[in-house]
Length: 133
Length: 433
Figure 1: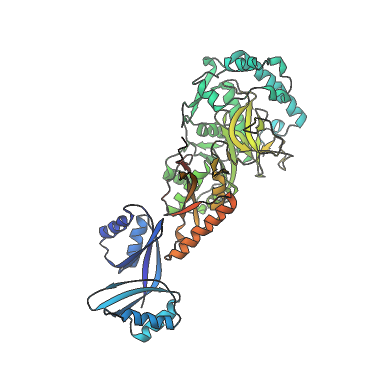
Figure 2: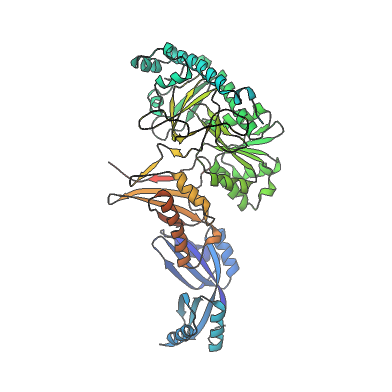
């Protein structure tokens, strides 16, 4: 399914990530998944939370540069080879992945994908029955 | 509108005559009342009789900021203390501050030239005018203030430091004119955005901006965000304060009140006078000042004087925009870099806020230039590639304008310190000793 992801632009300086997590903590917001992509002078923190709008507004209030983008969330079995077979199918259908990250629970693993075409990717995911919600 | 047609539209011959007459009087004054100038002239084998016309000004010695410091606090004053009615002091970031004493007559002249500026900006007695320059030792606040009163408009001495109240007064008093630094004007525009106000909530129609160099792009930005006509006002406390030169409705160079402040352009290295149209250091002689008159004061501001008459009808010579200061010009890897060049590039690109900081350093004997710039909120991306492209776009543009490569640092909004007065935009970490 398509879900909304929050991205936060962060200058590389000590304690900046902590400032994000502190704002979230003070507002009782739990992260379901996140990842950080970094370059030599800045980073992007990408977050999945349940209350997107409230999270965006508290982060903006605190002065962060925040944007919201749609990404695809899929669920696959938490076993060796599960992701490989999904990605092979996506590649076979011509879907390019800009970035992705994953987090596993006991039985399953949730994977967040930013494809070049959201609509195409979602169609394939639905066909494969990997929709996780 | 023109405040003083007889002086602002004087024929060249009359002006030259007047300047020569005033110069003779000035040289007589400083020779007899300021030991510093008498000694300098004597050392050059010059006597007041050697100065007959304005052309003879080239024979006279220069005055530098260092001379003012060396004669701190009142060594260059020509008038007796009993004649001095006001004293201003300029910020001394290094060494002694510069102290300038004004006689009552000096203040009359200052008021007159400030009124010429305000009239050129369209200010009349029907306007309400907010002065957003600092009041106090800095000449900006009181200088414009007295000019506004002289024109007969209502002056609101807002000063700096209380932006929220300033916005409220702009709206509630239906203020039509404003004077402040260009960076404070942009700061006000930003504060307006944050307060949910638009240019339609305020009534400004004209603004006088100066006390720091600014660019054509900054003018466009200020005009569109505040909904007014933005004009340059130029001045420096050593010479007088705001009112030394001003733009008219043509916005094509700033007219110098040359009946009071005689301008020259020199090569800052050889001190040779340069011709019309050539860029160099601006030098002023205060033709009519009596408190602390100065001969050929080197402003360090780099500009040129323009040929030809202005469409507005004024004949007073115009100076082009200050392109930088001979002392804040950065020499990076042997190349001259002016902060104003960086600024114009940033202002051309909608992706960035008009805020930047230059950090110059020397790493392994090589000069480095880092340009820190804030990305506008609408232009952030969740993709690293897009952000890196943005960075590259600015770096490429800077390289083509500056002829050296700069390390661009993308910054979060509001992360570069704002200033309500003059902005500090350069950090030079090079230790050359």
